[in-house]
Image 1: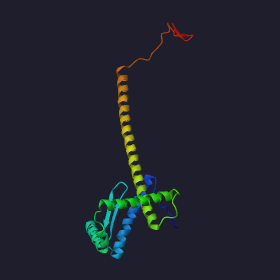
Image 2: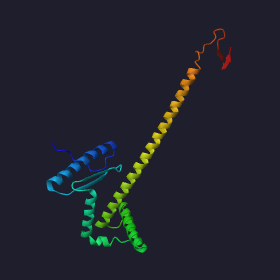
Image 3: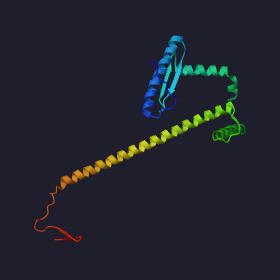
Image 4: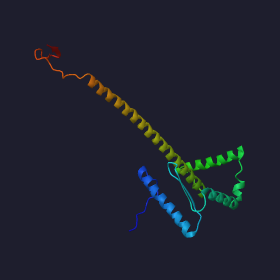
Length: 200
């Protein structure tokens, strides 16, 4: 029996998200090991959870050695990128930032229907990347705020529990010290209420 299609979007329930993360992470690590054994490939895998916990796998050697090998390979493969990595002066940096701002403003106008014509493919890629970054930051801020609110509520709960225990202990202590007999009215002087006033 074939499984149904899974929608690729963020799981909102944190418990389901954590369970899915653990299962998928285990499956990914298993597949990487199998690929390494079957094809004699050198594999390095790094996973950071949403909480910032690190999971890594290297099939041969160490992760540091694999990263150094990767860095050497990319330096040899892209010498132009290395030469362009020099620091920009203030004027060049200003121009780069202006171009980025223009692209973002154009993307915003396009999203709200005010853009003229259509956007080019590279502009759409930049817009998509920026939107993903913004969504990631918004979700991170939302999670931080929610965690702070949860912590504040836990602190408040602890304070209220401590106050409740203190008051409960005071009530128990006062009841044990002053053990009053139940109040009884004197049958010779009954309490009579007439016209809103007390009368004996």
